[in-house]
Length: 288
Image 1 (tube, rainbow, N blue to C red):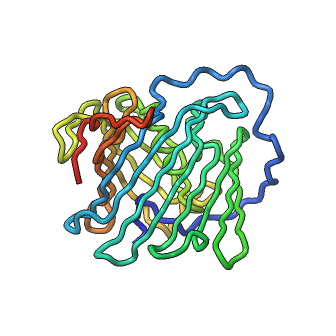
Image 2: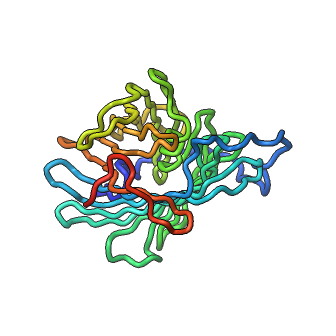
């Protein structure tokens, strides 16, 4: 089961497009000074989540951390993100996954990212690694490294914001849609491309299994080819996401129907990373 830390599939990448390889320094151009980062840009924190699947209960865990601010070549503030998850259903098919990304506060998406996954018990050098990079011209370049096989490269161009799963979450956190408004973007999980539409349906909705209110987004995830056309060979999903109403909009709960049951990612605790101090549990947090 491939649900170690994110409810997307990783195969069925879509049609191949051909673009020239990015030239050194191509993402850097003559631009006016970048605006200061939004006050809502989340950084210097670490959060833990419990992953549950219906009556099966807890099937895994996810840890997500964000570092401090650095500066990209275009002058925009960048936050380094890292997610590490593992899980198994009924003790079978254990998987470990990691995502590392550089989130650009100006583009509201990741400039580059790495997604690695391997089965429980496999060595680090047996990991399948997908890397991605998106430049200011809207070009996305991908590479897959799978042990024992030649590297695979893909590239495509799109006007829609395109990022990795962590970049998508940080986009929603930094600038959630206004009430009734919809944000549309694309998400790459490995080489698989998805179109995501998310609408804010409530500014104060009680989080299930909690006593706090959060901003609730509802959305749909549609599989697409690299040229933007629908991919009928993969299954779309719907989702519900609750964000904390405070400025950093910490994700409190994510629900994705998978088969007959819901896959749920529930906040366990969160704390600031500055000076290694342990912060107080975030609203809605609980203990495993």
